[in-house]
Amino acid sequence: MTDSTGIVVGDDGLARPAWAATDPLMRDYYDFEWGMPVRDERGLYERICLEGFQAGLSWATILRKRPAFRKAFQSFNPDVVATFTQEHQETLMQDTGIIRNRRKIRATVENARATLNLRSDGGLVDLVWGFQPDHTPAPRTTAEIPTKSAQSLALSQALRQRGFTFVGPTTMYALMEAIGMVDTHLVSSHRRGSAGIWT
Image 1 (tube, rainbow, N blue to C red):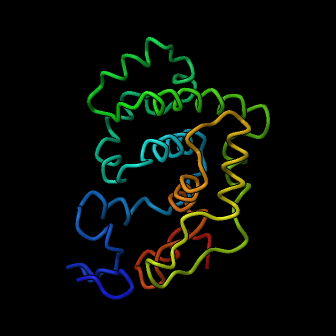
Image 2: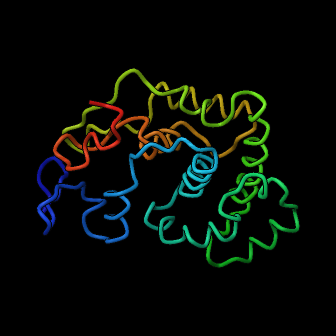
């Protein structure tokens, strides 16, 4: 049962937001992955691309298709994806396991090339984490959770300047939440503070 804050206490006695309370896949993602620091290039590249694919869709849809995405995009190895030709992208448009959106597939290739270009200038990890804010929200209800911030807007602009696409400020705020740059776990959630970044 959801309380007035948007929290659901599960059969295991643990408090989670409603979006992570029922679907076992979403619950496991919330309990073990979402909000934990991601500080490697391939991991960040994958998250940026998947957040882009999620635009307009549910995260549950992306999560269910993530194994197929990883197969289609060679485990999100930017060195490999950067070599994908137009013909390869057309082949991916026939892959029923992924989201067959031409612009998002093209963005994944362009983002791989942009990731490689960043290596001579500090790299993707340093760029993204350079926008970590000085403080994190402490939402008590789901209504208090932001959907974007000054930092996500600045990160979006910086990535676009470097050739990334599908990296709007709302999408980048979702990325910041997912990789632990901000902690938007509700204060009453059992996962609050789990990233070890914010006290």
